[in-house]
Image 1 (spheres, rainbow, N blue to C red):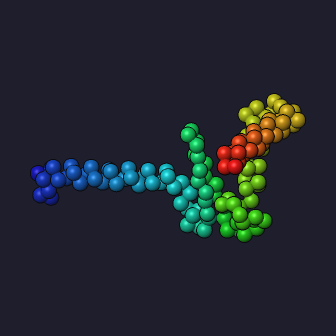
Image 2 (cartoon, rainbow, N blue to C red; image 1 turned 90 degrees about the vertical axis):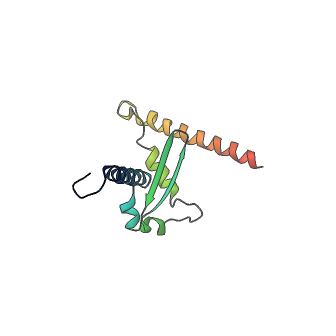
Image 3 (cartoon, one colour; image 1 turned 45 degrees about the vertical axis):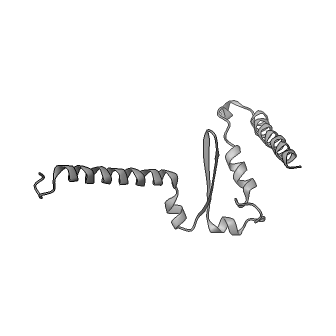
Length: 122
């Protein structure tokens, strides 16, 4: 028996439940990494593929100044540019021409994939 009169089995079960709840809170925290921003009025879009996850968050002003409200992510061209430009691993060893050609290759590949996806629906 534990000093407060609680049988050890019950105390052990209570401790396991507390640890489980703590684990659940930790997992939820990882799944919702931007809780503070959401509480401050930020919106977010989450997506991913087989081997990656991406979360884009924005404040209301960014959304309100978006020229196109047809997409879930406001000013998506700005977002894509900020992800792409500067993502070259060895950009300090490349000329600007080489670096930006790499970015253009990615955009061309995306364009090709969009054409393929569209063909599936037509």
